[in-house]
Image (tube, rainbow, N blue to C red):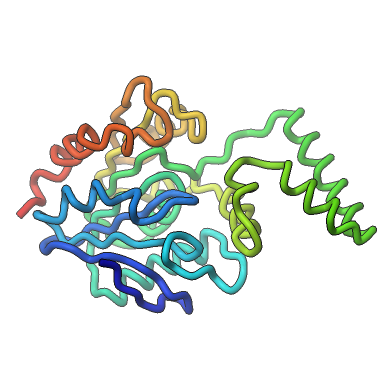
Length: 252
């Protein structure tokens, strides 16, 4: 059963199970604590597991204004501080990895497991730049003409599926989040890091995991051949077995 706590002014839902060294689970964009439940259930006999819904997702409230990764990282810092967590093990998927990396770059972290970790901004092609410029021009023109209905239609058919699924403050939040680049921080993450990737991940391609492995001082990469962005969920038993090896010295 979930509990609630006000963190950074936002009512936040989370579950706390087990005892031992603290593990914090950080779900991906558009997801919730349920997507991390297989990991929670597997680790709670050995660890004190904190499984939370980020603001704007699951049972947690939305922030009152658009957040970027600075705010989400401050939220994670406050959650960890309020709950008396020290030197945690962080386990994140996709968007959750952005917060994990930013936290680990400046705070003591015991270990970290990142799967399908978002955060490296690819270099835009010229055609992509032209599409973005055309979209911004059309958006500006429709705003200036007060064509709100046409503007909404333009926004609803543009961008990624995650962007189209987001509404209100969370759509603005999504834009801020995806424009964040964690690349300069990778060398500052010195704790042991396990990277788990699906070889066919199209949302966060494998080359991003390979770059993280190269640039993080103490990282290793495990690839699930033929799987996608949700490899950790699709092959939950396998993922948990890999975690067991990574965390074997920390289990009660």
